Amino acid sequence: MGSLIFNIPEVGLLMVEQALADYAVMITELKKELGAQKCPVIVIVFGGSYGGMLSVYMRIRYPNIVAGALAANAPILSTAGLGDSRQFFRDVTTVGSYLIPFKDAVQGAFQKLNTLAQQKEYRRIQSVFSLCKTPSTPKDIHQLNGLLRNAFTMMAMLDYPYSTHFMGSMPAFPVKVACETMLNGTDLMSALRDTIGTVYNSTGQLTCYDLYSLYVECADPTGCGLGFDSYAWDYQACTEIEMCYESNNVTLTEQQTEQYCSKRWGVVPRPGWLKTQFWGDDLATASNIIFSNGDLDPWANGGIRKSLSPSLIAINIPEGAHHLDLRESNPADPESVIVARKEESEIIAQWVKAARKKSS
Image 1 (tube, rainbow, N blue to C red):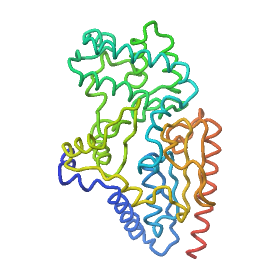
Image 2: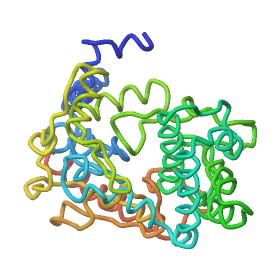
Image 3: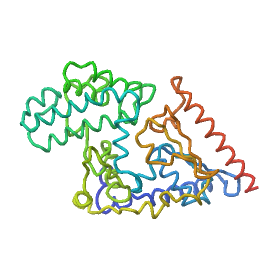
Image 4: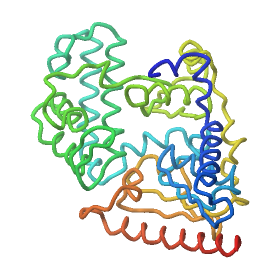
């Protein structure tokens, strides 16, 4: 069906509640197909990022169907409007020891870009940033700033110890690579161009950057991705998922977000809905959930960082990027993620044993 599913009103089915109900029905029907309705089939749900949020919600909403959940780098607090709205982008600039030395250089490059934009030196901007087209309006400059910011967000999130092709192609330790690139440049702005190439052009195949195809602005300032994925997340950021994160003390106001969402999707955001539906930070009566967080990921501090009870367990991974513990094992894995995976497996084994004993 392609893009037709994003038409109004069909897109209205894109809800957290609908996704959970679909999983509940699928699990139940699968048990029937396997003839396992009365067998002790124990279901544990796993997920990272938004998938981690769904794992938490699945355990809360359908504890009769799933016996436990592992939620990796799941920002269930920040996306429910809880905490400091400045946290995410503040952590983008501070996560990882390599970011600190080149912070001033990056800020200096942005200041130079701002000066050229104010002077309407658009051809100079096109040349130095290797843009496919010459920017001609403040909107184009705004888009360029979004493209640049998105690169740093992606590097901070995906600072894996090996090369990946997850959400784009990046080298091992992209933050370190970006730092070295930025500091070894002879000119701040051209160095910034080469630095974002860590995200957008690690293969070296692009000859220029297309502002509007490499980055899509949406209701989520941390980025919505590309293609149909960007449509889906944009809609969810306009309805249930709260993504009002400040960047350099600048963010869309509630009124601006409502205007955007109303024009784009015919909806307005529902602040506080996730907190009402899925308990926010009042999780004490829930059980059998692991909240793992890689410290390198700027999403980490938007989630649960301390254990809430003997069965609501926080596991923090000092050298972990975005849900690294859910990725396949790799020789380059840091010791902290190896230990975390072992702990997770032991906890889940205990849940399964207890569930089987209860059902026998």
